[in-house]
Length: 333
Image (cartoon, rainbow, N blue to C red):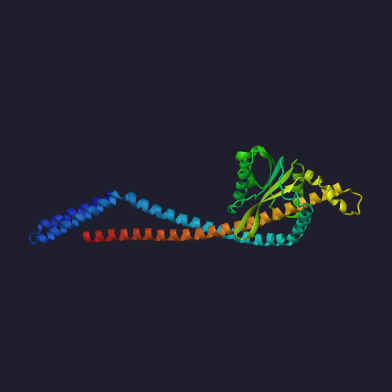
């Protein structure tokens, strides 16, 4: 810039000498040449003083281009995750639909048999089973379950609670306030497709705990864009055994008494209810992830369009400024 300014100053001084040495040069031409000289000097000074502005301008264009590439890459990733979630949703939804007749039939049988205690809470020790996912990027599925559990623990100070976690996200949301209530944490529940054998393993861990009732918190799948947090309360085995005389009217071919039969039915019923909750939550997770990735892809596309518009405007501004400088220099010479 300094060399360019010195060269322009030499040209200006030569032009002034030529104009001043020619007696035939009219006054209006002299004034016009002086005006051009002043414009040339002003443009040269602006070029020298605004070098940082040009650097910032070009740096901003580079930053916008880099941002555009990042947004385009994110859009591709979210679109792929949406397609994967949609494929998984179809699979888990098919398993859920096929298991509904079985779970609904057993639920109606036990409800008619223990209508006076089914779904009612009791005082004493309570176990909370928090069913969440191991992965994020699925909207508010996990945070809604954590919020409902926090609300219950904050409002009910009379009973004693213990928490059994199915999934890492529930642990991450509850460990800051209620870490001392954790008894068991089970990971990778939804890494493989949910099956009844896997559910029985989780149910065995629950039966090792002492409780008067179990509250299972999970997401109930309504449709692809709506999932509702559900609290399913199941009485403990001791309370069920107090009503063992209900089965005295039934005849069994085995030699087991009604209490043993009732215990087996309770464990089987609990595993079925837990299996239904896991399937519901897995379906809700994939549906929420598909919806979240669709929104993320749409937002990324809108951001890419805005960045493209910003980039074109800045690029046009740079081109216009360079053309004005070239024209000003040409007129001055």
